[in-house]
Image 1 (cartoon, rainbow, N blue to C red):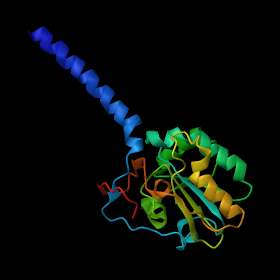
Image 2 (cartoon, rainbow, N blue to C red; image 1 turned 90 degrees about the vertical axis):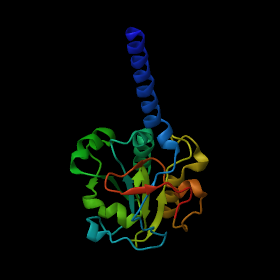
Image 3 (cartoon, one colour; image 1 turned 45 degrees about the vertical axis):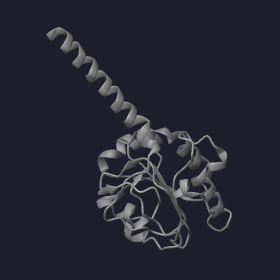
Length: 205
C-alpha cells in the first residue's frame, strides 16, 4: 500500500511538473497579461521623453525583451529580421529589465545590437508597456506611433497580422499610424518584473 501511494505521488508530481511547463511555455502566451494596479495608459500621439530616458531624439523602434519570458523567445528570429530589414531607416534598441539580462539578450540578438536597461521601469512606464514581448515605435517628433504585439501567430508567420512591422513600415513611408484590431494592442505574454500586476482585463485600456 505504501509503495503504491509513493508511486502515485511520484506520478502526480510528474504530471504537475508537465502541466506547469505546458502553462509556462504555451498557455501563458495566449492569455492577456494582467494589467498592473497602477497602470497608466499612453495613447498613440502622446510625447515620449526620449532624451530624458537616455534615447536619441529620432525615430525609434524599441523591442521590450525579457530573457526569463518564454513568450519573448518565440519571436526572436522575427525581431532580428525586422532589424536587418529596417535598421538603416530607424534606430533600433532592445530594452531589458536589468543589466543582468544583457548577456542573454546579446546571445539572442547579437553583440552589435544596441541595448538599453529599463532603469526602475521608467521607459516601459513612459511607453505604456507592462509585458514582454512588446514593440514600441516612436516617430521623429518623439510621439508614440505604435505600441503593441508583433503578430497573431506565435512565431510571427502570419503576414497580414505583422502588426509591429506594418506600423514600422508606415512610419518609414510617412503614413499615419495604422488602425489595427484589438489583438494588436492588448498585451499578451509575461508581466514585466517591475510591474505590479493585479487584474486580468479582456480589453486594453
